[in-house]
Length: 164
Image 1 (cartoon, rainbow, N blue to C red):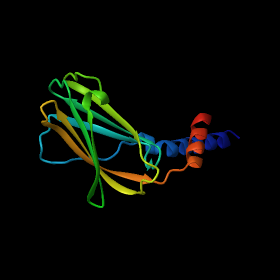
Image 2: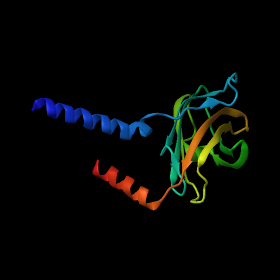
Image 3: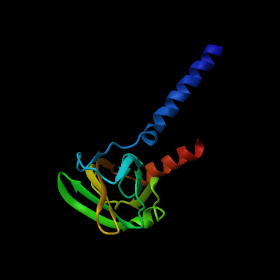
């Protein structure tokens, strides 16, 4: 009898881990210039949810470190599909994180909802940080998978989270 309970607990834990895998692992990224010596070093990139669903909010969180004070700048996002540049936007760095940024570790987070008509596919996203003098602080590229979103799956995801 006790062996059955242990087996059920193991199955439950495995199932829970499988559900959390997309949340646990950070997105893979690479620097735009692999030989570049960027003043801001990116340690981790998280994309949530993964994959991103069209018509629903997505959040990018960048964990990084700097050796110098940053009083402001730009957070630039460029998006390509099949190698074609399709979108870019620029945001005030201080709207994405607290400024001034002291030397050491910091993180910035950017959220937005994708239009419902965003086609599914594998996109390439470039994130560039620039200081207040427009000097490039860092530049990373990563793949972003977008799938069709729908109200039914969003409701069932909220229901699963609420029950946990």
